[in-house]
Structure formats: structure tokens, C-alpha cells
Length: 197
Image (cartoon, rainbow, N blue to C red; front, side):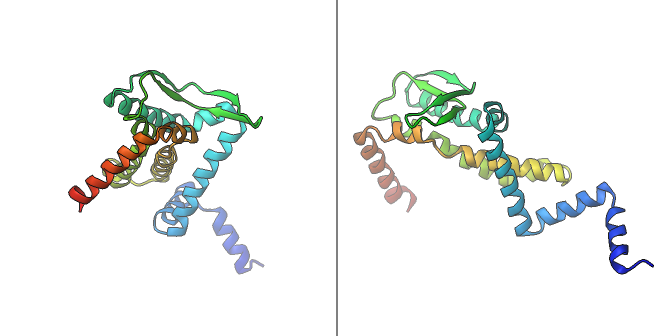
């Protein structure tokens, strides 16, 4: 005797891979909670992979690290900070507390001074605009919406948003010279008052 429960179970296991993918795609794209779950799962995967090994940290973050460091280099070049070293080969260091940390990349500038230190250090914030562009235009370039395309879309967004946040070293370097910070804050206020509003 087959009960309703057993029939549901049989129906569940008789689903094809295509119908499962379609169900997941609908759950992730047409349900806010589903999309949040997907973002958190990918973010969690990136964090967990990053914490266990240097290779894991490098492999899941290489795209974001490349663009993070590229932002430093481009702004440094524009503002004459003379970037002379662009490194995206990871290394392991031990900080002053004795905790092992991974440095996934860095840009060295030969002429980091009061007028360019803050913008060069905060340059990765530009990646928020890249993430916004991905959010606006990604689906214009994708022919059909599949689970793979949805995962790629979320991976790109999470990667660019996470790597748009300047590191603690970036903040240290950017805010080291108080005169430069005051100049840039003043310029920002003037631009906001007279140009934006």
C-alpha cells in the first residue's frame, strides 16, 4: 500500500536534473530569501576556503585581488605616486600578535605623499561602481538564465563588493598624513556643496 507520503517521495526522486535546476533557479531568482541564501552561501564558501590554506585563499580571491590591486595601481599612476611593484602572488606572514595571515597581493608606490596617499589607499572603492555595472548590465550579455549564470552573477557581485573594501593596511597608509586627509575632506565638502547640490 503506497501512502501519499511515499508517492511524494517517489515523485521527488524521479525529478530530472533539469527540473531540479529549474526549481533552484526559480528559488534563487524569484524569492528574496533564496537570493540572500545564495549570496551567503557563496560568501561563506569564499571565507571558509580563504581561512584554511594559502592556495585556497588565492584561488577563490584571485579575481578580486587582481582588481583591488589594479585600482591602487591606476589611481597611483594618475596621481603620480609612481607604482613600481604590482604583486598578486600570495604570501604568508605572521603579524605582531603571532597570528598567521595571508597577503594576497600588494602595490608598492615610490612617491606616496600627502596629496596622493588617501586616494591611492581608498582606490578599491571604485570596485563598488564595477559591482553596480555588473548588477545593471550582466543579464544583457547572458542569452538565457540558467543556474550556472545565476551562480556566476552572484560570485562576481560578492567578489567585487568584498574586494572593494580597503584593507587595514590601506586605511593605515591613507590616513597617515593628517594634512592630506584634511585637504581631501575639504575638497569633498566643496564639491558636494557647489557641484552636487
